[in-house]
Amino acid sequence: MNANELRSKYIEFFKSKNHAVISGQSLIPENDPSVLFTTAGMHPLVPYLLGEKHPAGTRLTDYQKCVRTGDIDEVGDPSHLTCFEMLGNWSLGDYFKKESIAFSYEFLTSKDWLALDPRKLSVTVFAGDENAPRDEEAASAWKSVGMPEDKIAYLPASDNWWAAGPTGPCGPDTEIFYWVGEGLPPQGSNKGTDSGNWMEIWNNVFMQFNRVDEKTLEPLPKKNVDTGMGLERTNCILQGKTSVYLTEVFQPIIKTIEGLSGYTYGTDAEKDKSVRIIADHSRSSVFILGDQKGVTPDRVGAGYVLRRLIRRAVRHGMKLGIDKDFMAEIAATVIENFKVAYPELEENKQKVFNELTAEEAKFRKTLTKGEAEFQKLLPNLMKNPKKIISGKVAYNLYETYGYPLELTQELGAENGFTVDIEGFKEAERKHQEASKTADAGAAKGGLAEQSDVTTKYHTATHLLQQALVNVLGNQVAQKGSNINNERMRFDFTFERPMTKEEIAQVEAIVNEQIKADLPVTMQVMPLDAAKAAGARALFTNKYGEDVKVYTIGKDVDKDWFSKEVCGGPHVQHTAQIGDFKIEKEQSSSAGVRRIRATISGGLPLDK
Image (cartoon, helix red, strand yellow):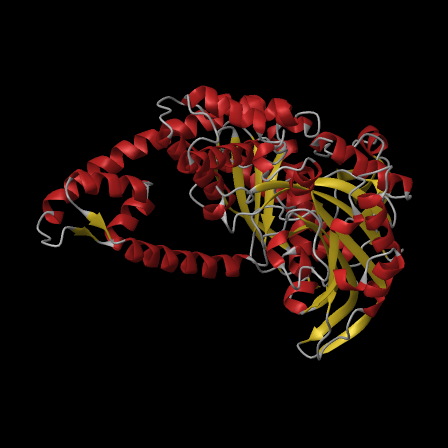
């Protein structure tokens, strides 16, 4: 079975269990500044897990592209990935632990589905603590499908408890593991007794409590199930491979790297690591750039992560002896491999090629600048009798000029110097702490902690987009938005800077709609009906899928100002938004402009 078959089988299985198949969403979270990328399959579903009704019903399934950037430096070993796919299924107040566990076990072990050997499966459940009891319900459900007692490990909250945040929905989870050791697992072996030979493949989260404060949990009136299975890992297990990079998910990419470098994968440990880094980072970069709300390389935020991924891939290409621009060539292989599951990659391929080529050329210039800066520093460095380049100097070359530590070490060695690696790591750690502190401020108002202010900002983006179309024309299309409690940021396609008059006109139109106190109406309808009714959408949903349509105007059929496919949340009428002010209009990337705006005042939201 290959990854495409696994993806299809998963969806087919849950469809047979009355789950509605919904579309995976963008890699760029919708109005959630708490994270840079969609980090898990459940991320786009947070509003529904927190109580909003989903237009497709109470049983859902999908596959979702995800990016996690916390361990970029770990990528290069046989298992870590930056970009990965999650297969998920959800119950929104429908079935609970018994059914969820039975579904998982059937899909994994049934001859009709994955046909994994039940003897090679083990699970973990919550062991209980002073806040909540041991999860006997989950353990009992496992035993009822035939899981032996010695294959059930009871682990603490650090392993088997999920929470949306310090307060809010939370609950125990059960994780499913597959034996990757030799032969069959010995008697009594499970994740608790032998963590090294068990690989996690699936996690079922049971949201059954609301955390009021540190010491108080209340049962939720409506209990939800959120599950996620890692596609690449499970695919690797099904094929009996020792690494995800040996599966067809990565092999075509690796073959392209071999052709470019002349190096054969599997013959040198250090070079293999470079190949894996290029394969992962190029794939991640293509998914980020090719996304329907794709960001471009930048100095901050998601764009900075993308830049780092591209530059790290290019640097490792140089280590393999690739002395020409190569990222676009690898990108073509990635797109060919994934265009069926993710058609947006093919639709945006020219943008992907252009941005990768431009960033690669920029990085090569940066390296030249960094080398020139090193030569300027050299006379002073030569005065140091210990012939040590301080960590601070090495980190400054990296942070200011993008000059990698390895190249500073190489240049230093040529002149008889060593580099203070620990000092470099310390400088990097201080910089990361400062970044995290800044990010913490930006994280206020994420979906998991939705505030009235962010709800107002969210609705204001609808008014802003329509006002921009009215003033600038139909070439305007949303390319992304980011909201916190203090401001909104809205990116849109447009080839030139807006004039002062155009900015004033857009601002006046938005305030006019707010002052008119227009009702905001939500309807559920199929996507094709929404399009026919004139609703704006990024059209990433499957044709015929039910979607939420928000209309701002006196009449949903004819007298409306804005009509948009959107997941929410929204105000009930526009006077709740308050005064709208455009603070700045600037370039975001080629052909994309960015507006920063604030709101103040407004009526309270209806509760």
